[in-house]
Length: 210
Length: 82
Image: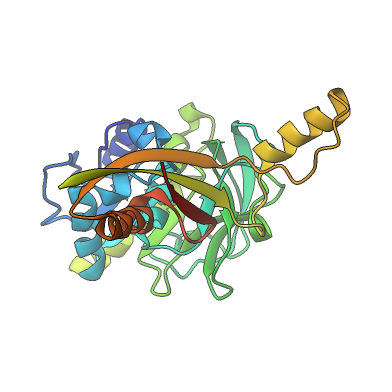
């Protein structure tokens, strides 16, 4: 997905190419028919006007995302994409300004809490990984005590409830995460812990297609 | 059809931390020496609604709040006429 103000769309494109799948950029007037995985990338859609993700979540194309979700397609929202999924109501909670009041841009350590999702099946349970974060509004405000937490921060990054960095739906098919796996899929980028997320999802889709 | 002007005051719920408000409050108290507490930094939205009457206009404003302007998970709002 490319919204006005998305800026990690190319990174996602290259990460998905790297694991050998066909990737298409999808704009505001396009359709999501025929795709198996929808990725909402990071950035500052509509300049974070009103609330991050608030305007993008109400675009016509976001209704297509909702339709894809209803049909059981896999959906991954990264950073601003996570904020959009929450604004759409596809994931519970809220993402608020970091408790420090500052934008945080650095590599962080995460614990993989849930390996039973299509996105995390190649990780080991409780594995510690390193991924970059870059956000001003990453403080996860928990509203659902039964929420499936997929990644947690090892150190307090933004004041999130329970150090939550990523959550998924009950069926594990919609994942929202603040860290950027697409900025860490090969050594050249400073780390490759994000690669397993992409290989997980691609292997999952290939297995279910055959 | 007439036009009606409204102001919407959007604030975080008291259960939600507001780091911007906390910072501003701290500066007013510690740097300026003013006895100021519980400062909350919200948003004020002014808008004009075209409607048959004020009741209808008010209904439309509330719909705008619920559809987009306010996130009911963490925010609450008040509407007043201008």
